[in-house]
Length: 242
Ligand code: BV8
Ligand code: ZN
Image 1 (cartoon, helix red, strand yellow):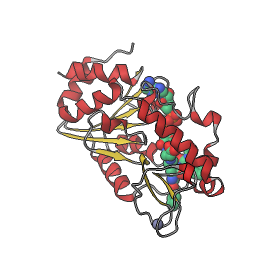
Image 2: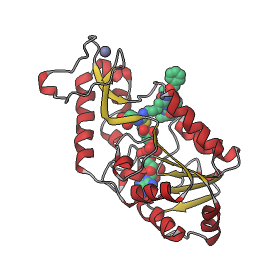
Image 3: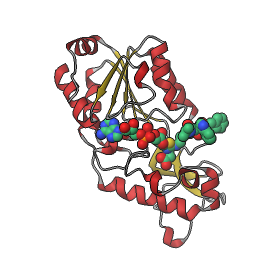
Image 4: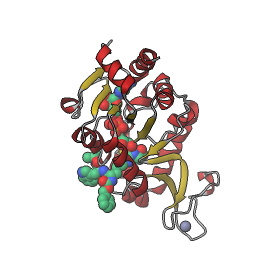
């Protein structure tokens, strides 16, 4: 079990502007497979076939089945103590921002209010052509869903090669630059532009804390690396701050 130093707790108890940025690792203890882990979903399916526009256009049924499979899974899992600890952070720190790469909606279910979802949300759909939200229930038995404009309906997530929502990305960059403490939790720090956020924070003088079960490319520039499961490490920090 990693040590959480008194200095770290002192620094956190004085901090006002705190940012937490999460990746798939925060949901691993809820039973949601990560992307690159042993049970990584990309081991079975190739991301270029699935999480891209070309993949969708060339095989919309396969991509829809993949997302419906993941949606069903999300409906069967619960937030874990790591998600709940981050919801507590929002009450502890005066200016708190949660940024997530995850599309699983678990942070909101754990009670986090202000969430910057960089890559969208698997529970939402939209028209691929006109971007209109599509709120009807998806039932693939009746064939692929289409919009009134004729466009194909797709999950409202950001695929590889697609731009992130500009306003959300702008807010994320700004909060990283303004932060005094920046937590990077449960991410392999490989996917851009999300992976640049902790570097921006560090360059702007923030104290970077990485929480992960293994080292990542970010580890060498982080001020402290807390090795362990986020569902165990984060609640210990909340306890120590009470
Ligand atoms: C963009 C939504 C540009 C969909 C996702 C070459 C070719 C093509 C593109 C690129 C390229 N090189 C770079 C790029 C850009 C590309 C990119 O970064 N590729 C990577 C792979 C190199 N990025 C993009 O394409 C982005 N868009 O750049 O647009 C552009 C510019 C102008 C005009 C037009 C376009 C879009 C990226 C978003 C893709 N969408 N998700 C879906 O989910 O289906 S990405 C998806 O994968 C996730 O959202 C997340 O971001 C990423 C997975 O990463 P992690 O979350 O870190 O998960 P991972 O499994 O990797 O790691 C888990 C970690 O948790 C591990 O470290 C593990 O140790 C740890 N862990 C496990 N258990 C625990 C734990 N830690 C703590 N506790 C535990 N219990
Ligand atoms: Zn449309």
